[in-house]
Length: 263
Image (cartoon, rainbow, N blue to C red; front, side, top):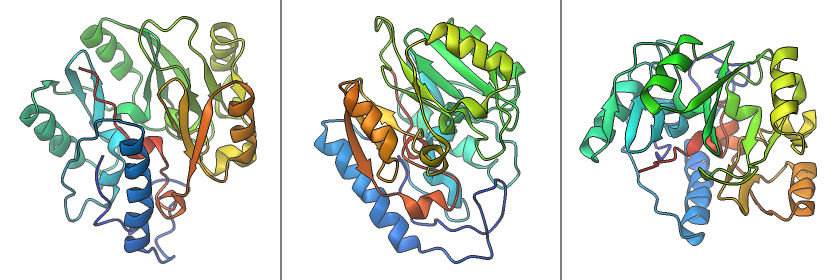
């Protein structure tokens, strides 16, 4: 995770961002600290990367890379404003003992790569290039399934899919998703692979309810995603709501603030 000490919205690279509107950095920090405390209370080992002045989106740590089997596949961002984040995260991975692979193709880390069981779901259409999917498949030795995103408000895969049972080897892992975020080919894949998936409504998706983190039982979600909360509870999960409304002004939520380090 990365504290949002320098968070602001000074440019526009997604539909959520409106630089003409004010942001409250101190509020963003307080909300982020609430998420951080939730993780600590759940017993998670949380590592922090130092924020860099001039990189306000660095708080969205999920975009910093994709880590599996101690291999850190670095990020290569689409927009110039975020491109310095890639080397900053790769430097942190190296300093913390990960095997860093410098990307040859544009990708935005866990924003577009989601591990579901032993399979990696990979988004394209707005940010990560589809050839990065082939690159990650070669690096990880995992099956990588390409999904085309079609709604610009859900420009990263982690805004349109929530992984509910994330552990490799999990029997019949499940997800939740927003159907309108995908083209018909992607929907066919999701319906075939995840027939019992939770289908989330537009209202909950618009507060980035799907941009959530699950350990297989506890699911940390946007506190305003009430119907998704209900669905999770009915399926036996423990939804935990958190208010990250200030960070939503930059287009991020719970998952965006959370990069998983899989040793």
